[in-house]
Image (tube, rainbow, N blue to C red):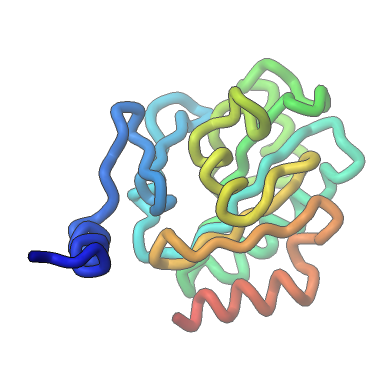
Length: 180
């Protein structure tokens, strides 16, 4: 007879199950977005990399954080970091036109990191990644909330809107995640 711990360990080793929506419950790499330019943006393409996923907005007091997100991406991309921007109008500070969002990001900040199309990031309509991240590391409370996801897709840490992407605690967390 197999005891419960042995059974659970075996299930964990076989990997998380994928739901019909394509979202895994315990691994960030099971989630997929639509790219802002169109087409799929599966997080599985970043497997083995550290990801910093931030919900973004073009007309917010925190919008200048785009520049710091781009600098962070530039500084650590070669070492394995990918910054991903997720525009959201959940706080009514984003355009509803994805082309205008892309144009704004390119023109104002020269954004080169991947960006998704518009998504909900809170509440019952939240994209499955954000629902998972909220359970793992706390909910989004405003624009530019950031989630740092480890190379394994499981370790996740949240940073509030007020924490700048280049704040010492974010840099320390990024460097620690890259070292693993």
